[in-house]
Length: 340
Image (cartoon, rainbow, N blue to C red; front, top):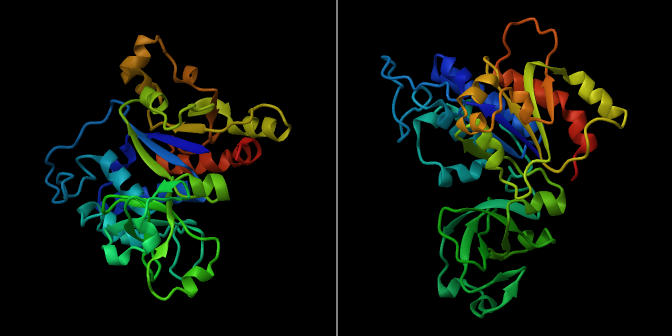
């Protein structure tokens, strides 16, 4: 699995208009989708200051108002989460919000779980829409029984983008996003008489682990650089970490050693952390936990400390550019050393 972390959204803060802010977030989302990133973590490096009233009419609170100026981290996470969600689910899961006003103009991510109604896949993303009545529950569901590991005490209707509703033997609150596992036979949809189709709810990682699908990315916030690692979503943590800096080892040396069978070991969870214009050094200095541990240089935190673009012609590389450079440069490492 591949995760990335990027510092607070300074590049978004420097973008002058909502259109530019939305475009930058969309470029990052495209990179996450193209390179099959499993999770993106937005962390605070302690350097950001929220902009107060600056005369811009778009400066509002996150409560329905545009947050790109007052809280760029929230804005970025909002856009990334919205774009990752299958289009037909967005109306259920995302209320009207000024942050999303321009998101419809962004290129589609078109990931495997963004299925059309005419496409067949045994797994689909859905949203719980309502509770069925007794008359709508098939008789076999009324009894206490086991089905695909779930105990059918109650049932829920789920919209998965098909003409028919899906019924699952689980009591799930309305407006909850769920991953659904359908029958192996695609004809079950074609031959259905219009009634609900029985299915089961599974964990979000099942399509990837059981069927090999890339099933989108998660979005997580971290209060500091150290929190990115200590609050890892995986019980066994990250077994490979890579930090990026213009002062690091050229990334070509890392990929060259990998192609020769040396260098990077096999991994299950890889984390790549991108800094801002000032680098990850400022994040280390602002992180009280790292200071207590005596960490002076960010490279002490990582297995590898790499330069994504040796000999760069510009003094700075923007974060959205670094994400594309880094994920492309590490593609060979992911394909050759990542455990599926």
